[in-house]
Image (cartoon, rainbow, N blue to C red; front, side, top):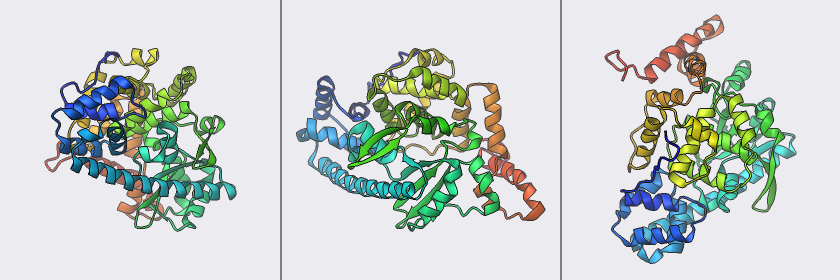
Length: 397
């Protein structure tokens, strides 16, 4: 992919307006473009749908209300304002819960740090209300997972999976997160000790993150968070794992790169080599550059010359421009994952991990006890084959 490839939606007025608004601050020249677009012919209903599916309604309202509120139809403006108020209240509620949980965990001897969610909203946009999030992400060390899980359950949360003691070591080794919910699933906590499951084949040295924590203040409370370089890598892997399914992910990536002028790029690329995610990093940086003019380091520009990048970028960007995106099939997601691997060996690791790594869903699908539990890799292989493309006629979709 040519590093100078312009991914801007030049002939799509609604998307152009949304992309202009998908940033923390809007400079005068861009503000004038927003005024011109809002004053022209726009499909406001489509714009609302695009903002919803890309997770950008808070930023859309924020900038429209300050730049050209009079040009927005009354019904549309009222809808966005009502959503913004509700999102603000919910975000503040979640932020309060996050601060309470972090204090509780650290007071009880479990070192815990937030990432994404409220902490990232404040870091990138200055206020929790300007980023749309629905759960709380907390990072702990692997050896603290079950102690932290117990403490979170004591706060009234239910775990997504009840992991038997004899399988806990395997669960922590193979997975990276345990989810908890409360209040009819309105409050969701994701307890992380990694950034992707083992089968994704991106080794994550968590000790490096803990060694470079930074301090920040949220709602008057000081907390430790991953440094900008580690957060960048975590966001790139997270976005790649989800196939960059929302424009907000790339908007946040671009905002992160703008909020720090002196990125330690040698450290970032060294860590990317260790994690075997250099192509994931380069792909994400090129998307953020093409859509949001984010800085593009030379290493990313060089890696982006891969012949596979243009087609992958085209598929990702096209999905941003449709009101309702078609469900990404597991086979399509796997194709993108493989396309972003650094080597053929990494591709082999990915497929082997995907097919052979047993998960709690496999344990729940078939109950095998005693010696029969040795059959779980076969159960896993059959379930993956069905999920990733075997149709009723026996061929791949």
